[in-house]
Length: 183
Image (cartoon, rainbow, N blue to C red; front, side, top):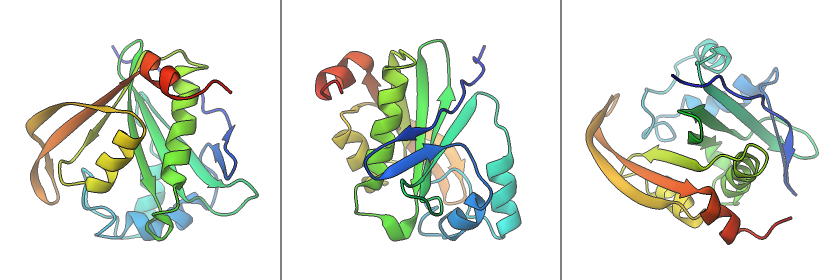
């Protein structure tokens, strides 16, 4: 049985504020969620309309919650970090960053802050991520965060670009705590 998702507390980093969904987030993220290049590695095709994007973001998926992140001083959402509760202890991680903001370390900063929360405040023992083998940017981010490649699930997803394998990356609380100095 999947546990009910925990609340989404506001989290901050030096450059970002991570919070729940706010009005305007769909409009801010639609250019990325509707862009074929940005959505290549997702399990669904790009959204054709802003209404589809809004409906997707508004949809409550059992066991999942998301932090939308924006500049700390305010402004539109730049991306999100989603967390899916799998069992007591482990959870799955997903993320998206606006395509025009790639390369500035914002995804690293946002995901690292959520990991601090999951392993610290929530005392999670394991976080894992599922990514396409050809999604090199996502693989680099996970490896930079300290995740370990644990396995390949062949033919795992049937997506808008065909049947795809999945690479599973995992990170344990003790690995994260040992890697990141306590603040």
